[in-house]
Length: 121
Image (cartoon, rainbow, N blue to C red):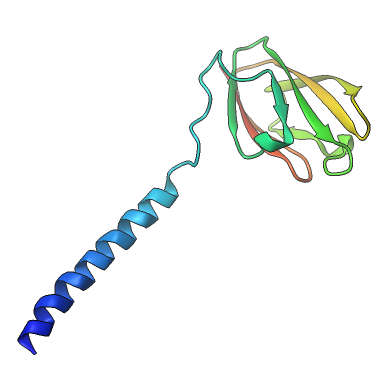
């Protein structure tokens, strides 16, 4: 009985430690945001869930599929951080939404199946 406790107690403690480390790792962001000034100026549906940082005055575009992300649903909240410049049709049903970073702040750019955090400095 004593020998089994000497094996069981450290085993339980080790299991708890490994589980705790796993849970802490899952709380960290999956991907670090791009560096200010080095973020891509062309975003795609595959960039959903990421964070992008731009300087005031920077212009960038987002390539989206009208079927998955209709133009009418594309919003950045709160408003005023970035401004929609224009929509340009690409190879249908794709389109490009062009934006300009207007004022420092952070907004969440969302549509039906797309979301990205936009940080303007």
